[in-house]
Length: 340
Image (cartoon, rainbow, N blue to C red; front, side, top):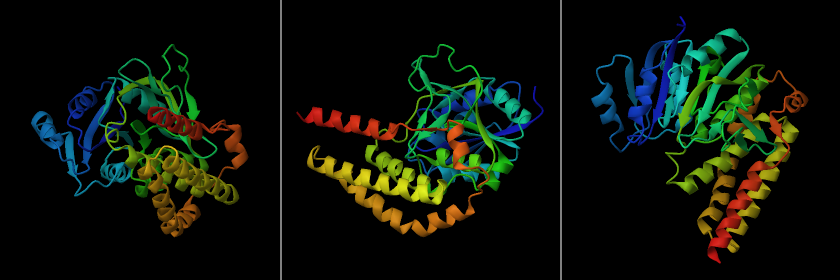
């Protein structure tokens, strides 16, 4: 059993369908000292907190913090990490169930690697395929999970460096997480883990995938009923990420290209697909980007940059393929076919 204590932060929002199996799996963890489970609730309207109190109210390790409104995933995680009393902190979604030895293997890896700030387990979907073994991105900041939808045949059984850990389930070193500013609360959801991982890499740290640790992730439970909400934050945060983390010239170029693509896709959605709601999102993103420009410039100045862009490319943490654009064009094509 590892001597290192760990804290687990679970962010909930209308999570009554998932929270019981999630917490049971956490509390059944083996070979590690589980100090506390901190639930940060984003003002759920369902019975999430009632179920927590009913099933886990007598366990002193389970603590609940209720936020007065939905502050988003990164803000809630930052609150949880600040409250945590352990050196290692797990950040989790409520739709994740962990293997009993998951935390022990993540903590062991962190303890043996001083330059590693975050680790991710192998994420599997209950349907039997891989949900992800770590994140990389394309040149326009679209993050994607390696191995997603692949059958697990043992092809990802070696630890590897990744750009970012999927914070559906990941373990971080609390002191470094806080020193680097944690996740950006303005992101609300989507790309917050990519942005944090990129900043970790720039500061000289590594993020790693640990294959011996296993967790099961359903995925997108909080956003599947809010597709336009997800589109807005996904695109806007991608723009924020490339603007702040790339070298200045590349950040400006990537931002201009993204804005041009968004405008083009907006016109296509409005004229061809006849989706005016999605088209209006483009204007909303542009207005918000301009409003936040001063904040983003200040964020750029605060980022610790100890590594060069050439080293970033050599590490194969970035794909030259426009993965995000291909996925979105395929989505628009399916919409157009549905209209015919």
